[in-house]
Figure 1 (cartoon, rainbow, N blue to C red):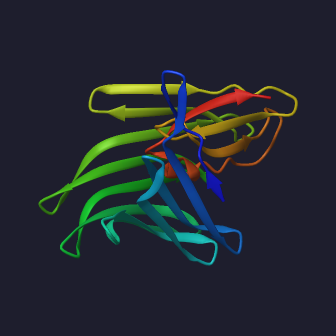
Figure 2: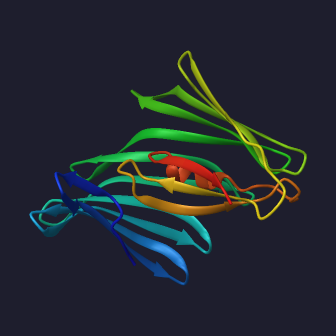
Length: 209
């Protein structure tokens, strides 16, 4: 699978400058490679691989291309009772992994209610950012808020009857990352928003259909 959505404009010239390739195994994404356009040649830039235990992602490995793929970062996912418990990010120096960032997941009634993130420094985890989620009576995501230092940003969602809504997840360069359907107001059952973690470096825009 190849995706080349972002376009740069130079006068009347429109040139593709980034593309992604994807590999799957048993229906699961196992590898993503980002390429940059260098004078018409596609050069590998970043590779991300996904490691599974059954249906659950256990590690996300990120490589930079320096004449060969060099492991630079990894995320290790820990579970508790089928839910993500926490995730620890590691960076590498001289082949050694060092703790860098941590995400703690909080649940209530089977729904994800918050993610607390921490920076690691000199053997101590320091609070960094907090995400909080609320739901309507049908289990649909009603609001999400982000608290960083003294700043709080909040988004609220309203669902209409009908075919429902969809969400387009875009990367920072404007490329389509994921097409995500969401339930209607009358739908029942919890909404799995743990996927939001995978877009923590992305931007999202939602539309109605």
